[in-house]
Image 1: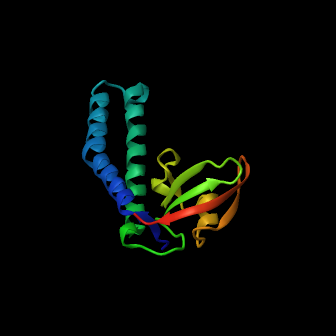
Image 2: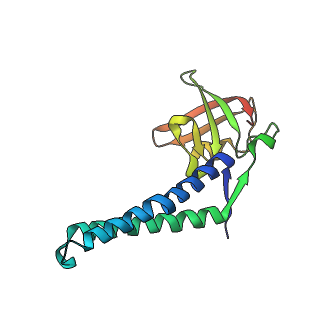
Image 3: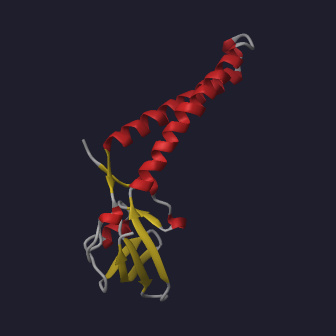
Length: 157
């Protein structure tokens, strides 16, 4: 069984989503199905069909979250240290072409959000950064073309 690396924050968000689905979304859709059923003939009842489809999506997401949470390996980033970049590292980079500085934290696939500066461990940039250290330069092929970065700082917070 493949373990999924995740930060404590990402793990808590998945648990909160699962709890919300089970305690709020699931009972709500059950009520929607019951209400639609009371409207009569189920063969021509669009509300019933929509509610059943919604229920299917909710149950699928619940199963997916339970599976992921069962395989998660929570990584305590605050307890990490070192000079080499690894999962959980916050990395300050400078674009060698534009001199623009950008900071990213390397996180699990389910918690990545580029707007918030969190990139997935499976992203091409993350893969290029792993095992590098401050002062190293990397080149990454992205959908927008090739980009070169210099690593200015590595920290674990």
